[in-house]
Length: 504
Image (cartoon, rainbow, N blue to C red):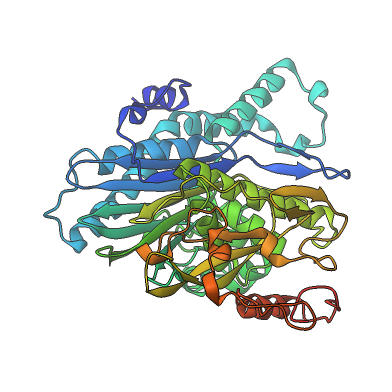
C-alpha cells in the first residue's frame, strides 16, 4: 500500500484536485527562484517548489493555501492534495462551530504528515538497511576506488535520499459561514487588509511565523531541552529557518543526529498548525493575502523588514486599481518584487541579495472592486500613499481618493514611458514631478470618488482652478505631505537637495 501511494505521489499526471471548482474571487502570482551573476543576470537554480490551493467547496466553503517546499516539491504537492481531501469532501458544513472547525483543521494537518511518511516508509526502510554498507571509516575513498557492489550501494542510497528528502511549510485560509480561519505551519504569511470608506487600508498580520527568532517557539524548544540561544544565533535548523514543518524526515526521525537538536527529549520540529480565527468577514471590504516565505524575504532584502506588510498591501491595491483580472494583479505584484530585489542587488546596496527563492502570492478579494483596465501596467519602484481631494462634477459631495506615488527604481516613468536612468532606485532627478507616476489604489471607494483613470481627476477643477502667482506657480492641488514625511524618514541623510523632491 505504501509503495502504491508513493507511486501515485510521484506521478507526473494531473491530480484529481485539478477537477475541483476554482474560486473565481482569487488570483495567484508566482516566480521561480533566481541566482544573480556578476553581470546582474539571473538563472534558476532548481525547479519551482512552491504550491498553492484556491478551491471552492460546498455550503459556502472556500479553501486557500500557499506551500513553500524545499529540497523538492514533493511534500508541497502532496500536502495540497491531501489537505483538499481532508477538508472539502463533506467534512465541513455551515452547522460547525469555531471549535469544530479548528479541530478539523488540526486533524487535517496531522493526516497530511502521517500520510506523507507512509508514502516513503518503504524507501526509508531500504535506506536504513543499506546504511551499514556505506563503510563510514572509508569516507575519504574516491567513488571509483570502491568495489562495483559498493558503488551500486552508494548510487542506490543517493537515489533513496533524493526520494525521501524534502519538506514544506504551509499556510491555509478557510472561509466558512463568511468567517475566516487561518492554519499556519512554518514561515509563510497571511495579511488581512480592510479598506475604509475614505480609501485607507488597515493591515492585520494573522499569526507569527514559526521561525528561529519567534520567542514562543524558542521557549517551546527550550522546554524540550534544546539550547534556544544557540538556535537563535545560528538562525537555521537543518538548513531551514522554520521550527514547524511538514515532512523532512531528518528532523522528525533523526533529530538526535542534528547538532542543534541532539539534546531534545522528544521531537522538536513539529507539524502541528497554529489556528487563528474565526475572523468575521461580514460587511468587510478589502482583500486577503497569502504569501510564501520567498516573496517576503525578497522584499525585506530589498527594502528592509520594517514596512513590508504595508508596502505589499500598497502594491496589491495599486495593481487591483489597474488590472482587469486578479490573476494579472497577483502576477504584477510578484514581478514588482522581483524588480525591486534585482535593483537592490545591481545597485550594490544589498550585496547579500544575490538570490531569491521561489515567490508566490495569493490574493482573495472581499467585496473589493477591480479596475476598468484604462491604466497601464506598473513598473518597478517603491509605493507611497498620497491623499488627493476629489469632487465629482455630478455630485455635491466631496471626499478624497488615496493614490499610490511610485518612485521609479532604475528608470524614470514619464507619461507611461520608461526612460533610461543610471541613478539608484528611488533617487529623484532635478525637476522630476512625482505626479508623473501616480497610480490609484482604490478608484471606486464610493460613488462620488470613482475615477476612470483618464486624468479627469486632475483636470476637472471648474471655476475654482487656482491662478498662477507672480512666480508662475499655482498652489498644489494634490497633498504630498504624507509622501514627503515617509520619504524623509527613509532618506534622512540630507542628500535630497534643491531641485529634488520636497516643497520649494
